[in-house]
Length: 132
Image 1 (cartoon, one colour):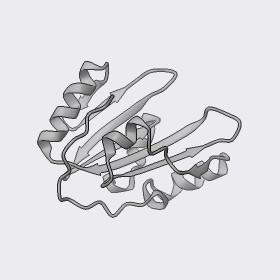
Image 2 (image 1 turned 90 degrees about the vertical axis):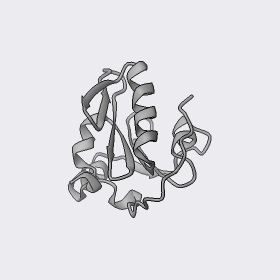
Image 3 (image 1 turned 90 degrees about the horizontal axis):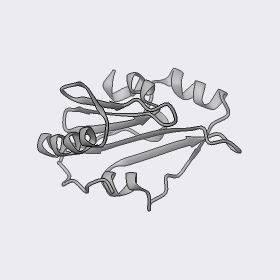
Image 4 (image 1 turned 135 degrees about the vertical axis):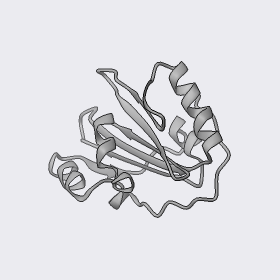
């Protein structure tokens, strides 16, 4: 179970409609994925908490999913999460990023300016609007 981390006071104005660059949102829709509310009982909900944003797009009748989450935290909380992710098999891809390159399910986390960002699949990290 992911840790529940203390919130910071840095607001994130992102919504699910603008979480990714416009061209990726267009591609997600063109590929037949539809937005659905993220399960409030999921591990992501526990980690993100009430002050974060969780978005999920799925393709009906398949296991194809695109996920995004962002939540405000301080640098100490990021270091705690990063340490736990590295222990769980993630690779450090920079001082503020970790990625889990698994063929069945890959994801990535990035920390910037008091906000933790999560995406799956990990290749979409470069399309997170707030990280442009």
